[in-house]
Image (cartoon, rainbow, N blue to C red; front, side):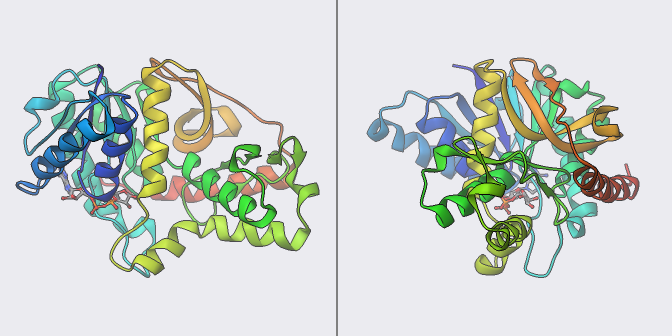
Length: 307
Ligand code: APR
């Protein structure tokens, strides 16, 4: 089975390992700086496999040796948000953590594809690409699947329709100015703008934008992890199975959507080599303006980086 290493065995890292292992997507190596914790979680997960009937191997470690030869490395290492904090407040501390995580992972898995989760997501994906001197195909940030899944969940709650019928596309930076594209989102082919009243749709857009903060406010001691982990597992699977799956994800733009030099949430096709292609939508003036405002914010965060 392919090997996937997850750097950061906290809430999101361990939950991602759980999804990958139970669905037999890959063998998993959990890495964390906390002594004993990744080993304990790895062993606990390994002991769940006989019950689940999965032959996935899972181990935990404090050093990167066992990660050698990983096809995909998922980076969740970092500090999560506390109530009142924005994702950008994590910039300095998480830059240091991501830098060492990427350097150590590359020493043992020089060909790995990196999936980033650590916030502020778009900036941390940029750090990974620069520090690792990696081609853009090999660094992809997870944000859009999560933000779109939140929107899909809220639409499903409102309409009482299966989540499988609901397709939503949230693009832009992973911040409160992300851009839920209501015109492109639909319920079994019916545009959301027709399926929902203006008031309901506006409320769903607003709740989606603040979806991460809503959970931070409820948990008080950390940020969301089930839905982020589910999204990471979907990306890992798309890559390892060479699905050519198109999902919203943060990728390095080279002119697409009129932007270059930043990581930004766009529809991205994922296959065995990582990013296969960026899909470009036809956008109206209002959508373009909203994406530009979000891109300006990401650019400011990236410019504030001290690498
Ligand atoms: N190397 C490995 N692991 C590290 C390092 C490091 N240098 N620094 C911190 N960690 C570990 C912590 O010990 C912790 O176990 O990263 C883990 C992070 O897990 P949690 O604190 O549970 O945070 P989580 O909710 O999983 O979020 C992780 O994702 O959504 C973002 O904003 C969030 O940046 C945060 C990240």
